[in-house]
Length: 390
Image 1 (cartoon, rainbow, N blue to C red):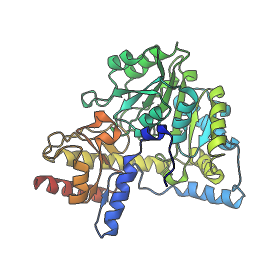
Image 2 (image 1 turned 135 degrees about the vertical axis):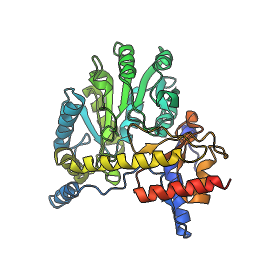
Image 3 (image 1 turned 180 degrees about the vertical axis):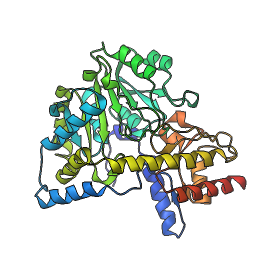
Image 4 (image 1 turned 180 degrees about the horizontal axis):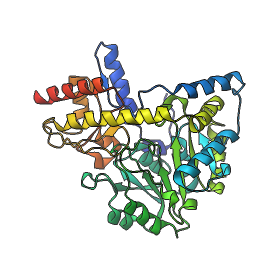
């Protein structure tokens, strides 16, 4: 007999990437060759100096419980890193380390949002935002990212959505799935609207801040009046190819950090100790592996965008950041919501439909170019052939 579940579970979403990955793996077990462009994971190994640091930590006894908010060494390294890169003053007491960056999203919403509050979030966007907003009984208010705006926010439309019930604005730039970035106009307009509101906080998800190809990353936390109004989220998964290490962090006002640490105690106890020591090395050690990875992603970006634009019915803007292309497939002969399934079954190419990232993603497909150039070329050729046969 199945247990009776709480009603709130009915509104809990998922990440389609993991569902598509499972389907693709099932096809591979049947002998099919699949080109994986669905999962948001760098295909590089974690740099050797970081792996070596973890081994040293294991051999030195970092196999026990540690403070819920994170090891002092890592919190200090994060505080120094964020202070330097975001040009704000950060103290270790304002840092909480978690098993990946997702818990900071979840915990921040749990700690700050009540039933019927309104939370604004990018759409198309990382699906966990809308899922968690609904889970706590709040009202999700999408901020539409449009292709004609290079997938930046429409400032006028965004500001019009802010009202007395708005308690949180979630920003994710560089953005998954579009590869878009916020403009200075976006940041400054939102900051001006928010900074005088005591009851309104910004979650700035910046996990792709190092994977950027045009311009420099700018955090809303660096704008006047926003330092104590912002939770900056970052991590190690994307920048250092450490997805399986499960380590991320948030930087926030100290009173909130204390509450987030309480949620850590009630859920995870702490983040893996030796992973945290690897994180110290990641931030303080050589950065050449990151630079090399981004340079390779830049080359792959040219391959995927050029190739997609040569396929009849597909048009693709060049992403300014991340390792995702988000082409427009509205002129393809098969409906956009059916295209990923078609490509997986008929072409052996695993992708994600735009609606996996929200209703405004309809008519688009996300191609991750975290794969080798030969595999990208193979996927492009297969996609072109499959669509040509329609």
